[in-house]
Image 1 (cartoon, rainbow, N blue to C red):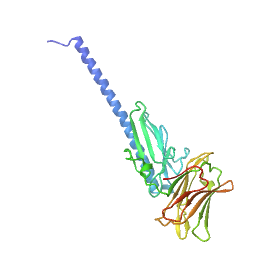
Image 2 (tube, rainbow, N blue to C red; image 1 turned 180 degrees about the horizontal axis):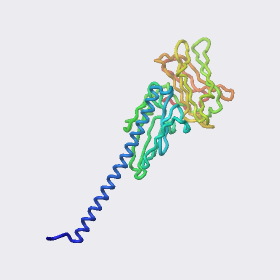
Image 3 (tube, helix red, strand yellow; image 1 turned 90 degrees about the horizontal axis):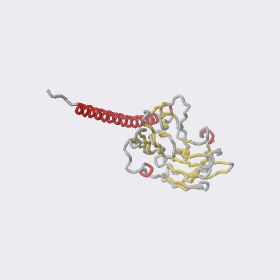
Image 4 (cartoon, rainbow, N blue to C red; image 1 turned 30 degrees about the horizontal axis):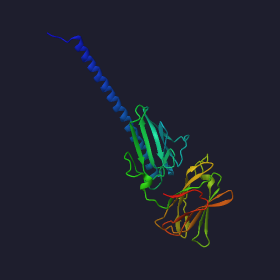
Amino acid sequence: MKGFTLIELLIIVGTLMVLIVVADTTISLFEQESDLNNSAEQIINVLRLAQNKTLTSEQDTQWGVYFETDKYVLFKGSDYNPLETDNEIHNLSKIVEISKIALEGLGSKIVFDRVIGSTNQFGEISLELKTDTSKTKSIYIENSGQIGLTEPSTPSNIARIKDSRHIHFDLGWSIQDAITLKFKFLGPEPDQIETIDMADYFDVSKTEFDWSNEDTPFVVNGFNQVFRIHTHFLDAFNTILCIHRDRNNNKNNEEVLIYIIDGGIEKDIVHYSADVDDTVEKGFYVFNTMETQ
């Protein structure tokens, strides 16, 4: 009987070794890509959890998600506090990292709005494999609150209808030393004045400001007037301020001026005309730009 020669045996063994290496590499790549896909799905699930908790007003507050390179954190409230004991930390797989955080306002958190589940921190979160940075997965969060892996046909900030209920003001000065928000409604006789002490609505470092009267609206001529004023950027030199005005089913036809009192000066920021379209003019103390969102 004729057997295998030594050369033939070496060829067979070599071929088997190559097949084993190729199979092992393929399995390893499959497992890594599976880790990447699973990580993206888990982030989406936590984002939707934060959104649902906000919609149901769990613990009577908003909920959000904060992102770092190697982890993401479910937190309660409008701001992320790393020392909060209720934070729910999710560590990424050791081979996956967050490579890009591209959110409106240039922050690292997404907080959802009550009632409708929308967010002002819309944008993109991208993941990649540490071993192969060409392997990526992106999560898209739209202004409406829609979350998914499919890129919108047009960017969220372009696609949504611009409307004067949501305006950004690049003030050109810092509100860190401001003390009072003042609303002057010109419709009643005499003018109705509402003032808010700003101190309680700054964070500890005075790099964020967030106030709303959603729970206790101003009542002007029998109709609720609801506003939210918060920052997208704040340091010692400049402020990018965002003002939302609820139209209250087109019943908000009151003329109103909004001021920030700073250094004893009433600095006018915005003037809403007496119409349901909220026709707007920027105030004298908006030194840079006003952008309707």
